[in-house]
Amino acid sequence: MRPMLLNGEWQLGAAGAETIASANPATGQRLSARYPIASWIEIEQALEAAQQAVEALVDFPPEGIAEFLETYAANIEIAGEALVEMAHLETALPKEPRLLSVELPRTTNQLRQAANAVRDHSWRTATIDTQTHIRSIYGPLAGPVVIFGPNNFPFAFNSIAGGDFAAAIAAGNPVIAKAHPGHLGTTHLLAEAAFKAVQSANLPPAMVQMVYHLNPSDGLKLVGHPLVGATAFTGSRSAGMKLKAAADQAGKPIYLEMSSLNPVFVLPGALEEDSSKVATELFNSCMLGGGQFCTKPGLTVLLQNETSEAFIESVKTHFQNSGTATLLDESGPKNITAALSVLEQHGAELLVGSQPAAGDGFRFASTLLRVSGQQFLSQPHALQTEAFGPVSLIVMAQDMDQIYDIAATLEGNLTGSIYSHSQGQDDSLYNRLAVILSRKVGRLLNDKMPTGVAVSPAMNHGGPYPSTGHPGFTAVGIPASLRRFAALRCYDNVRPHRLPVELQNPNPTGTMWRFINGTWTQKDI
Picture 1 (spheres, rainbow, N blue to C red):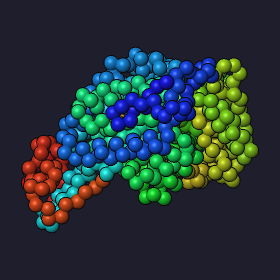
Picture 2 (picture 1 turned 90 degrees about the vertical axis):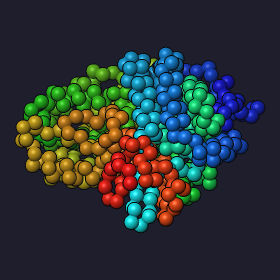
Picture 3 (picture 1 turned 60 degrees about the horizontal axis):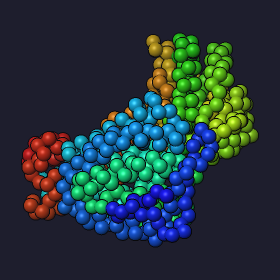
Picture 4 (picture 1 turned 180 degrees about the vertical axis):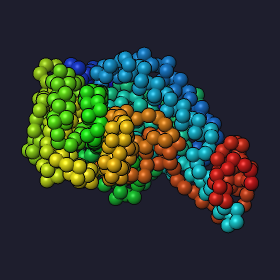
């Protein structure tokens, strides 16, 4: 039995409490470690402890939070071998390069970037109008941030280590992390590393708390609880919308990342120029991580002609030769089967795959479908059903006007890609398409597949509904991601010595950017 982390103590929960266990996706076997399901009493205790941490943080120096983030990153690196072993066991993701050389460094990099943002202060957007004596700044929320992590990134999006966690902590908020059932052991190891960093930085003991699981009804109560400051959720649309409804009813902010097809439009000149290259890139992007990336291209749109038919045959060959993909949990094959049923019932033609793979573990055959542009436009909602796994749908449009119509009917997506001729042959087509597509996505790409999200200040990992719950925020990219978990506080005619240091006349760091009388500057007033 592995204990929960509540108010600075490792607790096993009440005697006789229900428990859960992770499974090895490669074998389908449950792992031996058991994890308690938190009761509502324990959840309320965590909320009350977090509220005490909120009060204790009022006078806590930002340097201490930055120190925590950096110490935590170092602790993760020290525990790196054990973390990679556990994450591999629980997710079947490859140790190299995925877990050890890609995802683990990304996670520690996020934490260190967040620490730098804390020290810089500029993320707080200090705004000063000396004529009216009004000054404003972003600061922590009045309650903890609850984080629900996804199954597909055991480190980089983990509820107690990933981007949401780093942003919430850097904004000065305590966190209550809810582990994903797919990697409970990994989350336990991360919680150990986090708590050591809490103690090292002398933060309030409830700065970081973690429960493994809770009853669905308690999850709905949690996101709407009066003590909660905000919630971050990454997962399915069905679960996300239930949580959103509960949070909205209580007037609580919730930031959701849910579903996305990430459409790829390949214009005629791009196929004529290098059809084979685009086919290979499409296949690789669809299959990365077993097709279980939130930015996987689930929809490709082509103009009907002989070159496009040859392109489809090339992609089909890649899919046929790829075998099966290991899925992250036992619900994967069932969910993909249900999604494929919807697609086929509404006119999609199966080209390759469509079956759960035989043998041990959670597997599914690489699957490719096609549908005409006319059929897509007649059933746009059903044919945008997401199949989270090694599945992709190709849409064949009869002309460019139909391609523009398809783009216009798309739901909101995290990304949208356009491949075009490198020498400008497709420019007139691109110009019209990009205007339509850019309104449907959070990130527009040219001549590259969307899979993967760089941790860059310029990154937008968000988009219109249903990719997220709000198009104005990003889950990746510091400092912008911090502002989801911040409140804007305004000071009107407040005496200078009573203002936060960031709003006083001297620049507190000498380098912090402030918006003073309509101009961004690092100068003192």
